[in-house]
Image (tube, rainbow, N blue to C red):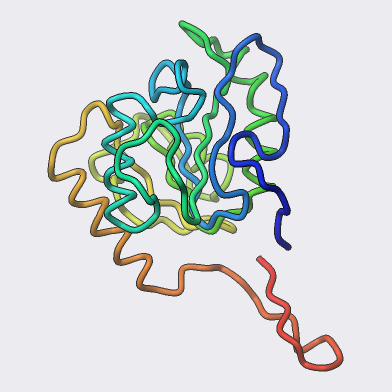
Length: 208
């Protein structure tokens, strides 16, 4: 099923309970969903677009090198098969556990609407959330993000490719993620089943 919309910013019209928020942005039919923490960490307070601060632009450059963004450094990137959003979409100096919980329903609804094949959680909080909620992997204690960075993890319905915190990146981190994305894009990463054999006429009908 394809989402039909011409909106790049907030394609599903999410309205979280706050005065200012940074909505999801990108291709509503994306195969790759990049998941950050909140605007104060990964940017967008001024631009309204996730991952547009200095650290976020490091990620943009890698996505461009892998062929998932048309520009390497933009306040309003043209995406190709890519969507960006935050766990905590509301703008807040210090998000609280209660405000994270309040934003969770909006993030989850958007993630399931996009239904990307590959999730790229950025930083420990986003990675922990994705592993706990969208995979069957046990999560206990602190995550070793250096070890998890750019490593393919199979989830229940998603392939997860964690990304270490952008502000802590070295040149090697960028190179590792670029190589991992290029390798992934060269494979059949889509987790689909063809149910066409059950339909008269034999037309292909692919579902997640």
